[in-house]
Length: 170
Image 1 (cartoon, helix red, strand yellow):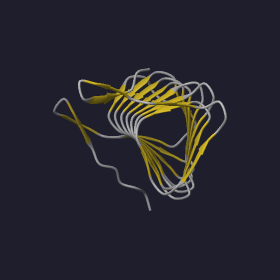
Image 2 (image 1 turned 45 degrees about the vertical axis):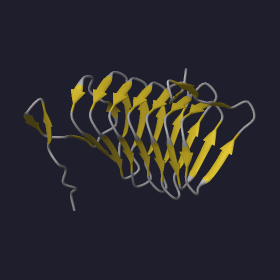
Image 3 (image 1 turned 90 degrees about the vertical axis):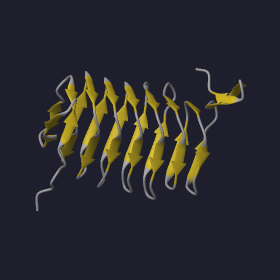
């Protein structure tokens, strides 16, 4: 059965989601939802809007994605550029931040994994019920019942209090 996707409204205009089912490079400058089905894709430019990876799809994020990123059904992402928005890692899925940044909350479901490699950074809160591995840098609150691994050489940025507000300086 084919999946149905909701339509987007961008600047008051109704826009159908972009559905990708073939390997390749994602279009630069798209505004609105992207759904990737069973394909290996790369983002080298910019995208604004939610992105869903389904059925074992994979994404190399070399550019900048502004919006939520959802990994479902065995999908995976490698973040070499910037993910600016929440990242939701479903069971059986994996996300790795290599030389880039994940800027936003991270939610890891049971059976999912989020890894910040040396040279990578995660700036935002974590809710972990799966596995979170830190080899690079992270800053933000942490909660959850999942496995948390902080390897030698990793850095956890502590907030400073400025005018009564906890602030992470990068």
